[in-house]
Image 1: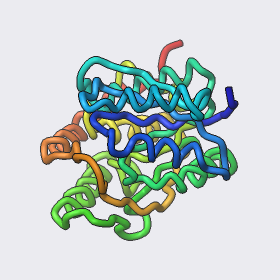
Image 2: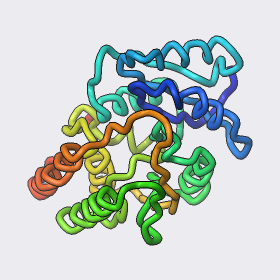
Image 3: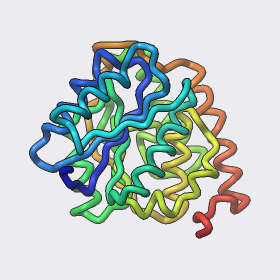
Image 4: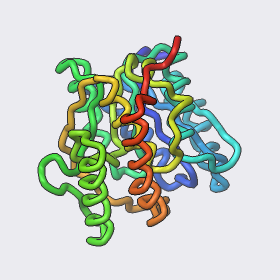
Amino acid sequence: MTTSDSVVIIPTYNEKENIENIVRAVLGLTAHAFHILVIDDGSPDGTAAIVKRLMEGDCAGRLFLVERQGKLGLGTAYIAGFKWAIEHGYDYIFEMDADFSHDPNDLPRLYNACAQEGYDVAIGSRYVSGVNVVNWPMGRVLMSYYASKYVRLVTGVPIHDTTAGFKCYRRRVLETIDLDAIRFKGYAFQIEMKFTAYKLGFKIKEVSVIFVNRQLGTSKMSGGIFGEALFGVMRLRWAALTGKIKPRTR
């Protein structure tokens, strides 16, 4: 088994068109050695079978799989992945999409922000230096951009891309956050994790990246997902005001 201090968590549901290519792109990086954990929510298209084939081939010891029964939500997939990564001793734990909307070549930049520059969380940000989004319909760009503006206004968190799903955490961040207390399961999960890390005093850096809309497969985004994020931030603000955001009790 090839050793690494870093694992990239990739949740999947019906990603057969992308999964082998994204796995090979991440594991083929030469700037830093990464492992991959795929969390598959019972994809009926055979995504998990492709991962198992790769695990038995030249990706053995670097690629791992957790299979779950049915679509249980993005947030619960990542939390399952975080717990697995902590249990297996990784120091740097990443979130990444399977569809190449996140460029694998940016992974070392996020790693360096934490491992070399001393930040606790590195966010692959679409909005820290303008609007770096390619091939999204204008309506979706505006919805995402102003959702982040709204979250920043309501919560006071100094992050430009609050809904970003491309991130690196130091292990200690995920060990400190009470993962079982994270409420949201959809894309509001991304906001809640950033907000919680910020409120617990962790250092956060936004690393400018270019987000490219998927070319293969079907998007899981919807207006309802953004609605959850927009209305959920009021609950987060209230939780902060009432002192409910606390480190995990050991």
